[in-house]
Image 1: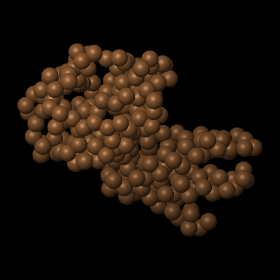
Image 2 (image 1 turned 90 degrees about the horizontal axis):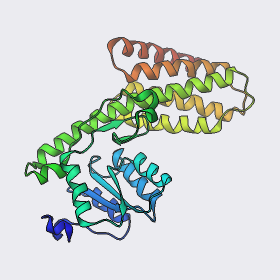
Image 3 (image 1 turned 60 degrees about the vertical axis):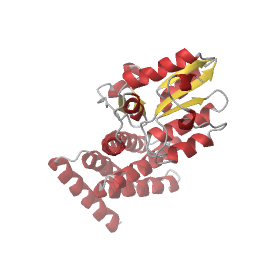
Image 4 (image 1 turned 60 degrees about the horizontal axis):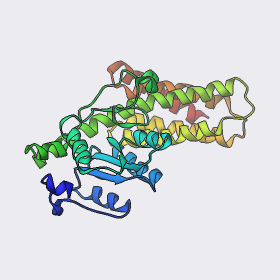
Length: 290
């Protein structure tokens, strides 16, 4: 009723009793401009959906406005919603005036997005929580809700803006994930060289997962060299996992070189590109010789 009174007609409102309704709605090429979702009962699944939208793994528009609604939200729920990339969390019960006010804030003063190795969404986290990533660029993302509310909506224009911003964010994710991958790889090398009897299995699993994600992003961006380096990293880590602690010196040397190559290939200046190419060629030669 509140949305109708504000000029949003029933025919433009999609309703659903479960989270699958959101997945179906955002998969539509002409999907929604805003999602209003109760996260009280299924917060984990709802936040996974929000996160998938933001990381361009679900739907066609990673920049849909998202309002999460919760009854008596606790600290854990607030943290999950923030980390999922939702724009706002509203405590229920909510009045019509409040929900319209929050929608208005997304039209007139939506927060810019930031990108880290594991987060895409509004810049809502405290600077100290981002640690070394406090200088991250803020991105003004496409906002079809605003365009429609202000009578400025052009479907071709918004699609072009979404595609351009999505590509820019993918490039930033590549940079952040490459740094994170290199950091984890260096920690694995240090662990082995320190003579640790057991390798940190969680770290190795995270490294494989991150390598697979980076490989997919490199493929999407046409970064063939980085994609090939990711494959080499994965092969080395898999050998380490199977080694039962008896890691070969060759694999430590390879992982050290690959760590450098990932960083160089992710930042495509002419110098770094040449360095990555030289390292990658050396690594391939060592692998073939082994």
